[in-house]
View: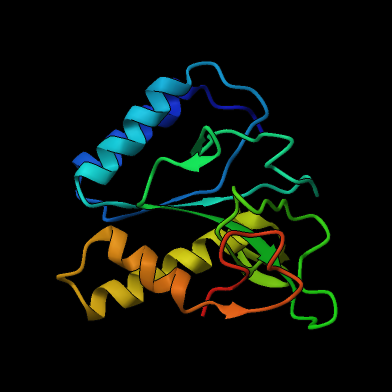
Length: 184
């Protein structure tokens, strides 16, 4: 329930990359930036090592193109990391697809993933139904891992392209995400 510093984010990315991770799930965010350059450098480091980063968009029910959440993956309104996927949360309801809490952004959120009614582990050996972009992000990371395990010679940027080009497009998501759909 605490906030992380940008140094913590950068060190975590570098540690995971240096220890063999191929896909990182990042289910956290904050509304302030204390050292954006160090985070950009860490994202670029992951990219240089062929690592895919999948990150949660956040649960503030807001347009993150306007109300920025960090770590940010845009510089001058353009994605700087071709190996990063930002994920919003969707529901199972076709008439109300975006989860009411999920952040969105035509420039900042790439895709949506299942983020409500997720039966998940909980402390003390328990399970609970949870919701959040922190549920959606690992679902997308899992899809990426399945694709990559089947095609291990692909690059991280190829995996992102495959996931983004194969989304289940939906009119409700076209103006609130880059690729306008739910990961398939």
